[in-house]
Amino acid sequence: MPAIYARYDRTEARPGDLVVRLYHSGEEIRGYLRRVAEQDQEDAVFPGEEMQPDDAFRMAWNKNRDHPERPVLVELSEGVNWNPGWGKLA
Image (cartoon, rainbow, N blue to C red; front, side, top):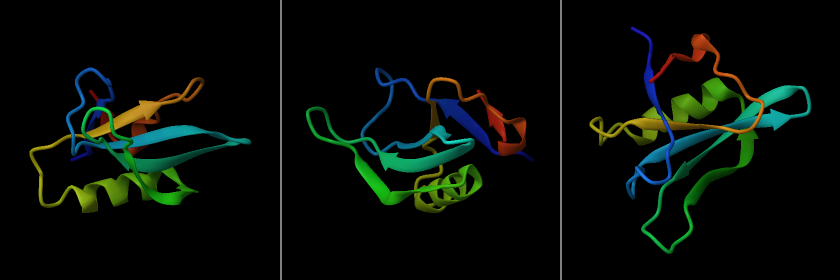
């Protein structure tokens, strides 16, 4: 069964939610992972380097293992289209 992701919406994201942000880096799509912080605080970013999308999603699921009820959110930067090979984006 493919993984199911939810679109990131800053008005609905809760502190502790994990967000995979995908963006263009040259000709490639890269990603990074961050955890949504409490209001008025900066989100925590893991790690500081860019990753392949599959690696970013795998890291998000690993970090979310203790909270399976929480969705993994996806933020697509301008010009990035969802690849169905990554899973389903709801």
